[in-house]
Image 1 (tube, rainbow, N blue to C red):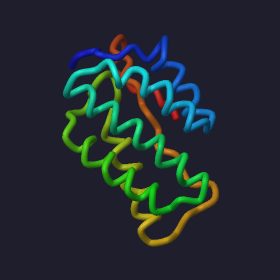
Image 2: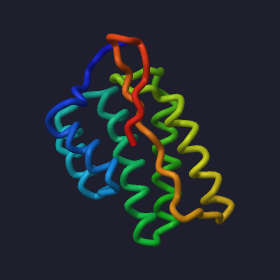
Image 3: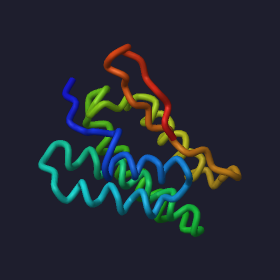
Length: 132
């Protein structure tokens, strides 16, 4: 699989740092700067990650309906991608987004809501590293 994204530096890495620390709006902003420069299919893939991030931003502001909409659209995009893709293991992410959707649809929102993990694929050792 291609290694189209550099998650170790620049806006992608800064977005991951923000995501891991719950700074969802800031993560969205960093990733959007990269998204604007991409072509398909990477553009739709990064848009899916941005939508996950934006969903949790909305959830933190009490906008359950917005979070549901964004997670649903994100999952549609993620389901079109192979795994791994752009150095991320997408299967755990898709499963976690589905769990979040199910909880929100059932109007059950644990506090705190579990945040889906972004697992980077370590190509040197063929393993995944969890990054929230």
